Image: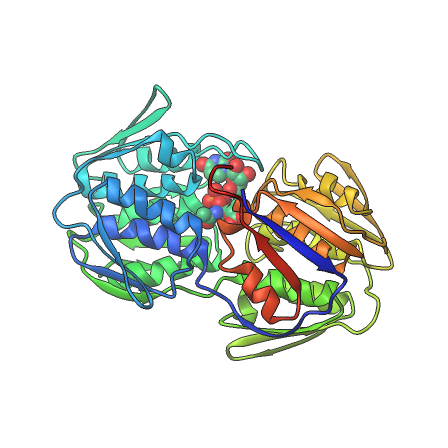
Length: 422
Ligand code: EPZ
């Protein structure tokens, strides 16, 4: 397993470009199942989760080829199987996003239940309730969910709470349903808006993506599209927090201020200088930081995917900060590792209290999940001495060439590749 060795402290300075958003590219890849026409996606991030989704689509009969700018996919004819097997789904929960497209296109689907992951149980009960509302027959057996429907029929369905994947799955399924579907209490993340842009380009009739009410007029078939994936706001936010924690000066291109408003506000409250232009965001920090309190929430609230990174930053603020994680039930796994570097963080249920500033010192730490890994890397950039972050494969799931981007910003980080035998 690869590791990162990071020498701190350093000051990040310079400009990087955010890749396409992993969490927009994954549903976009699944959407290719909805048509037999070719779909070309550009600005697709080169990260492990994308490869996993391509493997799954290949298993379902989709032909995909890498292009200079991304991926070209074609589900010629109908998918050759409707089975998303456990060994693929367990690697990546987002595999559940093939459920809606398969039922809509094929009339049936058999997808392994994704199971939990490091940050929580992460059920898909709302995905299934929505498909049943659209007329699918849903059954759970032997760890798989099967869903069948001669043809999905439009309806009105209200999510009990906002779910990004649930909104995406049902939006895709409803595109080929008979009649009109109204989805209420939808998630509003920018990645959902990006998926809606792709579906519209394919010929779907939908409106309201990005609001809590989405209306979809079903059509009989969808066509081809060429679609640039929206910039990754979480990757961008990670590097901007990197500027703040190292008292540096970083500009991130291919990122939109509107998608990161809650973070930019917090960074400004902490005493950072924040500048935005049409295609980029810049954060500079020159003096010690003021602590800020945060509660994560569905968009347009503070993103749970930046909670771990902000916590690392709060260890350097002068005073006490509090962080409430309201979206996932177990998303503080970075805390014990930050403790090993000298952070003063107390956790009580979904609430963390951070006392700063702490003089962080380099240590051997272990990544446990994608965003916890990013938090440890950020802390290591500010720590005195050498940090080795183990199990970097977590980071490789969602950050494209992180060590190269950090090196371009002046960080002393190197990837230690594990020997193949390891
Ligand atoms: C997406 O996951 C993202 N992943 C996550 O990013 C992100 O943290 C999450 O949305 C919240 O923003 C992708 O887009 C691939 P949810 P998703 O359904 O869709 C509960 C990262 O780091 N829930 O919005 O799985 C669920 O347990 C990843 O890039 C149900 O109870 O998230 C959670 O507590 C991590 N029943 C809450 O809702 C359901 O049927 C939000 O989950 C569905 C969800």
